[in-house]
Length: 171
Ligand SMILES: [Zn+2]
Image 1 (tube, rainbow, N blue to C red):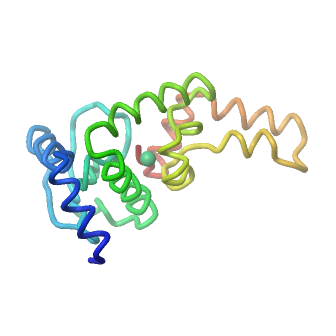
Image 2: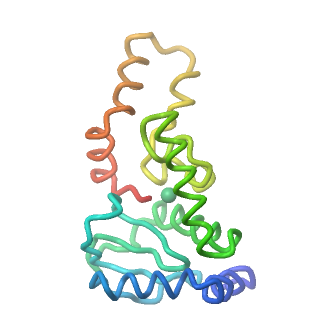
C-alpha cells in the first residue's frame, strides 16, 4: 500500500463512509474480504438497489458476483477505486449527496445517470459501463443513420442495463 492509499483508507474510516459500507454489506448478506490497495471486496450483494453489478461505499467495493468472481476484473475495480478516492476528497458521506445530484443532472441531460455525471466521467465512463454520448455526438466520419442509432441505444435504459450487466459494469 502506498502512503496515499494508507491515508485514503484512514480518511474513509474517520469520515464514516467505510463503516457505512461494512454495515450495509452485513445487512445485505454480502461477504467481505481484504482487497488490494486498502480496499475491501464484498461479494454476493443481493438487494435490488442500486442497479449495478458493482458499487462503492468508502473503501468497500460491493459486488453482486460471488466470491470467486468479485474483484477479478481490474478495469472495473480500478473504476470503483476512483470512487473510493472521491469519497475521501468529499469528506465521506457528502459524496453520496453530490453523486446523486450529478446523477440526476446526467439523467436530465443524457437519459442515463453516468454519461454527464462528473464523478463517473472522472472514474472512467467505459470502465464503468457508461456510454460516452458526447463523443458519439461529436464523432467524425460516421453517417447520420448510424449516429442516430447509437444515440438511441444510449437513451434506451433496457439496452443500457443489458450492456452493463453483460459487461459487468459498475456504478
Ligand atoms: Zn462508477
